[in-house]
Length: 295
Image (cartoon, rainbow, N blue to C red; front, side, top):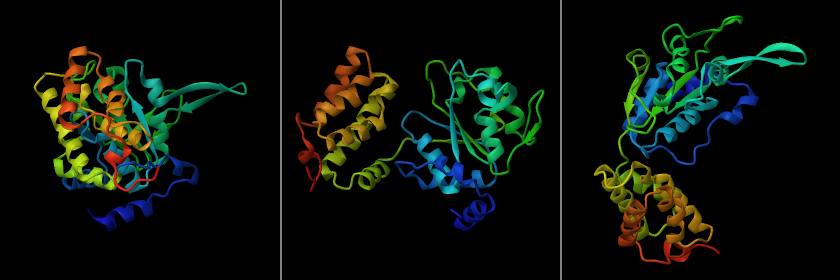
């Protein structure tokens, strides 16, 4: 990571004070030096980035970290069937009897040098994505009929994310893919996962930390084998469980509402319960999970 180039980028692209609240404050630091270095170089080179990978590979965490590192105000668009070009670009509206153009997330990011995250881009409608072609390629303009031509701020960056094989998703067309550099997000390694636990839960007991890591890979193995759905692979759910234990819940109660209840098939629920029971005894309290805590 070239810190001098990053500092130069930040110095050359200051933002208005009113936008500083949009700079991400990520809860987790992205762990994975190789992937982070690729993303930093792509960002500095002015490239649009597509982060591709299965669930719980840290795509949104990486995007938040880039917003913080480069001091870019961040906006997020989560695609679904009702997202159209007007939602992205903006539209005319009435204000005090006058027709004015109200910016959408794309035009806002383009005007002020923001970072726009296009989340689950493979769920987008073709009509919605077509308006982005001139923005994402070398032209870097927005031509809105009846309005001024918008030239994109040189610090503006686009990061798209996509998961594999989600319901409602589709293959991206070649024209869209050609406008991105593509980073394949790997499953987090056991060592990196252990570091995240250590950094964010320093009082977590060593044995609990090890078992939580193994629990994540046990669930992932079953999902990869098709025994349970991908929705069961939920690293956030494990972190949420620890947060609830710190707040006073028993660990198995926290797993119920943060992991088990996120799948709806009774058979899958039973499988996940069995995996948890193989790793943890029942009724573990805060004192069983954390060292040296205060009530």
